[in-house]
Image (cartoon, rainbow, N blue to C red; front, side, top):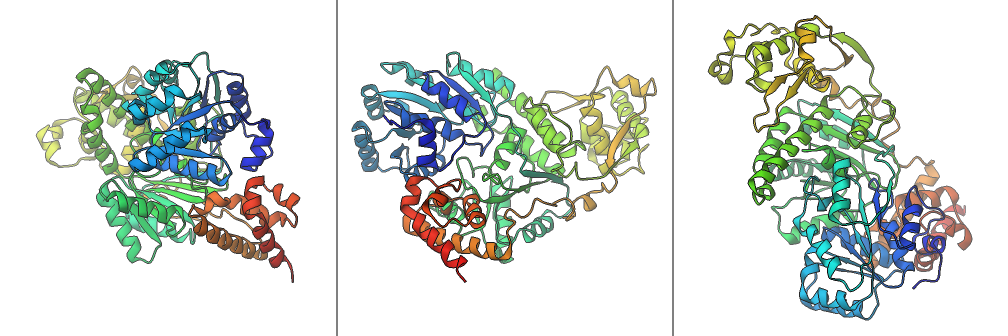
Length: 618
């Protein structure tokens, strides 16, 4: 049991003088023996909420974690900070696993990360039933809820495991993404006892948000990467085939790039992930299989080559950007095909196939609802940040000054005639068809479905032939968002009338939309400098300080190679920037730099001081 208080532990091991929002409340509650539930955005310091009490309590803290990469990252960071920690998962050989268990039984580790599948194994149970388990911390707790976006049946084993322990430990749960329904589900399933709950909010104000609809996604991607020279970033693609195509073209174009998807061998995935984490490759092109648990703090941009299937997935993925709280940029490239591909994923979800038919239908309906909300995000002209916050139940001002919509000039446009045509078409075809059929009808298309459904006989056929398909789709999305039309929850997503439809069709209510003055896709896709003002450069230093920053990075890379850890685990970019600005010349001054603790100073401090002093000496 550590005799230091929480402030001493924070400084000694993690190098910080003050706690971030929500951390202290959760730590105090755990130390008082209470269950806790923390909903905190990625990069807000969730892990410290269970790591600090774990170092102060008498006994072992088990951290249940879903992914190997997350465990490895956090254990490496703890070991670098001078904390003995271990992980138990399938990446260990049998000999390594039993050696780790042996050390655990000897009380060597105050913190042990464990995969949920291990909780049922005889060897682990034998250890746990005879050890003093002070706390079970459930990380990524949304995985326990089948209504969450990342349900893992193995998480349901946690409660049974806790029940088998001789004495119930403190149970703490943490997640970055959970709607109100999922939060309630987590509390019920994990049987949390009157938990102290902290929700610090979902806002990441340092992230610039934008949606673009480029005609040529690769050209837009290349332009965006050219705007981020020598910076780390992730490009998310919807399919393995796209990952191969995009990464190959970037590589041929001379970019420092690697790739990650489930079709690669375990060895190649690990090598490529390490190349990115250790800064040997700057750009990672990947499917959504990459990223959970990656705590790389200097990712400056996240580009989604395709639209994800839910706001939860999107928020989680952009959460890997700028975890050092410096400026970061998150751009989503939208196309209609993205919706079709996501619908295919929902219909062929292997996890859903294992559920009973009724539950499978409910989960599929919720997945389709999430997809619609994600699609609306791509079409809203309101503040993008506000849209995400409202989705998670957080209500703020509809202006953030750091998203593409807030930085775009809009004008009010009367779209009443287009709205009447769309609603009238839905009414005339007796609410039998989906969005694309309605749009094609009023625009006057002559394709197979229009002929099959005899939509040329619809009185609204071609009445909006002079309006662009892009504008018509905008109006359709506006009508759905405002409740003048709705979408069915079945597999085919039929457009339905609502009680409000007649206000436009029969009562003549005008429809006015906010439209960007330059809203056509080709123009919106331009990588305008105005949009990215203040968000591209993460480090704004003078020329001499920039030179020192590069020297400190080189020293950090040298140490990282020697220690065989990612560079950001030695010190983050943010800590190096503070060194460049403060230019500490003594141990006391260096310890005042955020992120420099006693243990790390003992290991590296003198070398960084020497580098700063050498550069400062004429």
